[in-house]
Amino acid sequence: MEFKHSVVRASSRFCWLLVAAGLVSGCGSTPQDETSAWSADKLYAEAKDEAAAGSYERASKLFERLEGRAAGTLMAQQAQLERAHALYRSGEKAQALSVLERFLKLHPTSSAADYALYLQGLVNFNDDLGILSGLARQDLSERDQQASRDAYQSFKQLVELYPQSRYAEDAQLRMNYIVNSLAAYEVHVARYYFRRGAYVAAANRAQQTVQEFQQSPATEEALFIMARSYDRLGLEQLRDDADRVLKQNFPDSPLLGLDTVGPVRDGNKPWWQFW
Image (cartoon, rainbow, N blue to C red; front, side, top):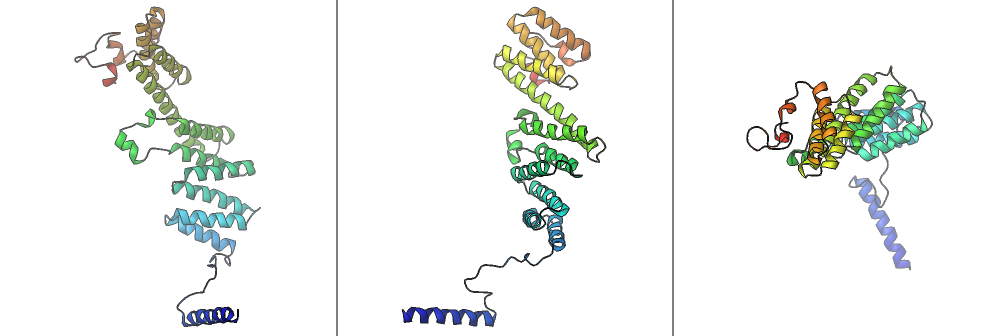
């Protein structure tokens, strides 16, 4: 037992000798948090500098510490929003949305609620397939649109609740884009069904597009798919109704000149290769 204590004492003396020599900062001790002695203002300034330099992961950690240290203050709210933005810029979409959802739940009357909604919309609006989208040649309208729908709801809430917000105008523009994207997606699905002979499904999906997105350019092809699907199903009255609406709303549409059943112009190519 005495031998064990002698080894411990010797080891401790050796450690202190190394520290004194400047070779190590400590032996067996837990690394110190360099921010523990910082003021809230210094912590915020450092976090902002990290974000400005593009070090978003580091910035998000500093903002998180600031939020805890300044709990119950406006600075804590600011840190929460800054952290959400840093997470968003670093690609941590799920965490950013979680932080924003918590902010809106805890501070529904905050003067920064409009920005929180705007950032929430941006996180979902910019959701994409990254490099895989280019490899697969997949358009934004050809994938699941839940993120776009979520973005639309955030922007819509912003525009309705805070029409005078500095972010309202841009939010409205993004809403218009999302509507067109969602409509294009529905037409993409309808076209997919038509190509495979699922004419009932194609007609239903095209009809949904016309009903939900009347002002979108995609309704032109949606009406055409409806007419062609009804034609294949032998539903002549519904076909004629869809054709009439198409002609009334898009009198110059190139789709009007396409054959209703058989092969179309330039050989045997189907209409979707021209549209």
